[in-house]
Length: 469
Image (cartoon, rainbow, N blue to C red; front, side, top):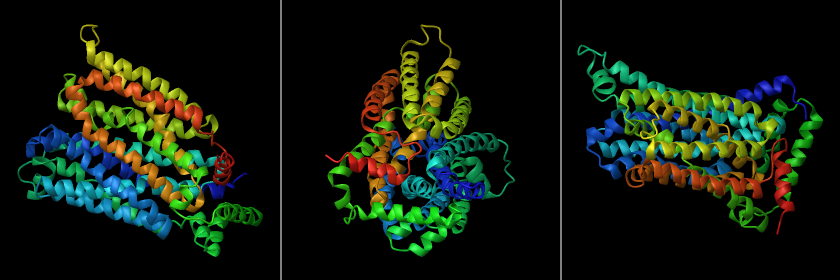
């Protein structure tokens, strides 16, 4: 179905606003990497407390994602995005002025709840608004925004570290406190600006038309569809198509998801969400500077190397965004995960016996960048697209909450356990473990998930219904 250029521009506009939630997700997740050493020294944290500092936001994410689906199915996608924007804003301000480690953890948990909510609401909103032929690319804008958030956090961490040394004693006391003496406060607090922008811009987007139809607001849904489809015949066809999928099930919530035809995709979504976190990417994004320091770099050089990691992440995601609807989801995963396995094994070998083999530290950066390339073009680009496509209109929010919950449980475990892995398994053993975890992920994508590129959400729903046991 061909979309007029004006409709496509409007779709991109809506997708970019929703994707700003992804930027906040990325910034809030990655900014922690530049503050770990400073916060650990200031509050004298041991290795488990250090893991808690990183992982506490993930606890908030678990709480946020656990309720986001239900809230979005009950009150709408747009209202939950408003709530997530408020949580991000409160977290940024609170972290900047936290009086102690306990308050810092509390506000990190608040921000984590915003991450959890936006991690399913933003891609779901984009998926429900998008035309089939552009859905993969538009949902990938959300993943691109996450990577830009990562890069933004790395650049701000690096820049604030440099600026801190040039702030003189004559500056106002609060400037000295936040941007020099305890510069980690400035790193965490800079999120306030994009969080406020996200809150304001949400006023300019409509509610999801599919949610409106599910909740018997047909007139409002037709108004939204009229902005996307200029032909009244297409509008009528879309309304009838959505109503047809709703009519297939009179059940709601858990009653629908526990039916045989939906248990399978729900469990597959849970499996790929949690397995993806044990393939190493978040360990690199959270603990990259720490890992680089273990290879002998200074803290400043480690932050600079992490900027390169973020830059490759962004550029590769742009490539994935352009090709995901042409190449397909599954082929990207086959290519990328194969490359991830090879680079993870090479990184493990470097830490195991790199010096004896005469491999310099620059090669560690090359291997990390290659790993990020393969990750960004495959599992990172595909996961939110697949999760936003796999579930029925009636309970898409609840189903994505379940998959998202498993994703954040896995992310929390990686954030909490990576310092323990690095200390007890050694860096080489840690990366060998990540390589091993890629194999079951590949098998699930190969055997259990259909190619969804070019199919409407209603077509994908029909596919799962036809596979009913």
